[in-house]
Image 1 (tube, rainbow, N blue to C red):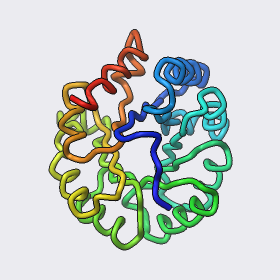
Image 2: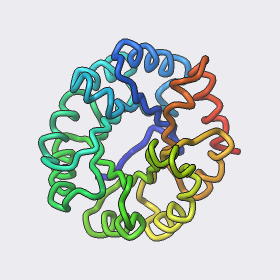
Image 3: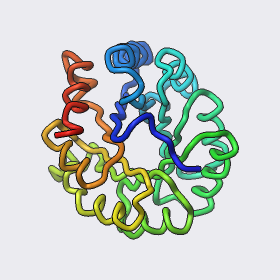
Image 4: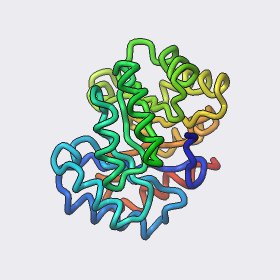
Amino acid sequence: MKLVLPSKPVLQVALDLTCLGRATALATDLSRGIGCNKLLIEAGTPLIKSWGVLAVSLLNEVTKCMVVADTKTMDTGALEAELMLKNGASIVTVLGVADDYTIRDAINKASDLGGYVAVDLINHPDPLNRAMYLVGKLGVDVIIYHIGIDVQVSRKKTAIDLLKEVEEIKKEYPGVAIAVAGGIKPPQVPELVRAGADIIIVGSYITKSGDPVKAAKDIINKFQG
């Protein structure tokens, strides 16, 4: 089932927090200050590990935006997709290094429930070829190119280093939704959008800002830059 975003491109705010109260307050401010047309709310992995499906359910309730459950599923794809989608998520994430059966089971369950699966290529040894296979053979509709926090710190890499791969997969499969994540700041956004990114995932630039709504708008204002 093809992912229908509220708009393209769209900002996904990664709430990689452990405090549920802060996460819901931040999500509420963002949804009120920006609206759901340009916004996806992500229940980050630390938040889900801290609070489980409650976090997903509350974020859905307080924002009414599409909620992404960043489970980074590695096994039991159908079960984890069902848990998240039945509790308010619209999208659930599965790791690209997971077995094809796990990814296929998650996709099938999501389709049954009217939701979507995004496959995260974080730390995959051959992300471009894996992306091509996932879209061409398994019918994945959302690919996440992702440089993790530890790699950002230790190797000084960010999502801008993924430009060529975003361009290649978009050229081959123009219908696939491409998300990018990894230390993104406003000046990098126009290049990522021109390369074909549909979803710009931003965490700490927004969540650690003194004015998260303004920080989110700084990103969105660069979509047409």
